[in-house]
Amino acid sequence: MKKIGLFVLYSLLFIAALLFFTPKENLYYFAEEQLKPLGVIIGYEDVIDHGFTLEISHSKLYVQKIKSANIGTIEVSIFGVYNAVDIKNVVLDKTFEQFFPPLIEHIEIYQHGLSPLEVNAHAIGDFGEAQAHVNLSDRNGTVLLTPSKLMTKRYRNTLRQLKKTKEGTYTYVFKF
Image (cartoon, rainbow, N blue to C red):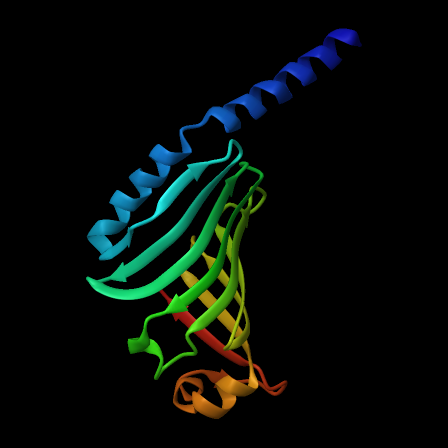
């Protein structure tokens, strides 16, 4: 019994050490290189490895060479069983202000090891509250938006692009 306990303890310590000493900064820069052909560039960021998490702060997002957003902090946690990206204080560029409210307070993107081909997200901002679900195997996604008063008053044209449900929420279904 003692040998089984030691085996479990050493296994857990090995996994913890593996997660702690993984070169997260190098993985981040590799992911950044993979996004470049898609026209997505994250620049001017500070990258800090906190052991089990990676923090990216004060970054600017460019899509197709157009400045799209300033991002306060991004915290990436990769544990295998549960992986999460926590994004705070996103301010969209002024060019997008006519389509969407500029401030996104919080975005949480997460994936469970039990369903590795499904990614979920939850976002809160001036637009209201949104839930997203993406299935990577059949390449489908759904966004459910509960709009704020600001969104319903100033951004009606954007809401017309979405399908309104009986409950007053809006859905957007996409394929990629």
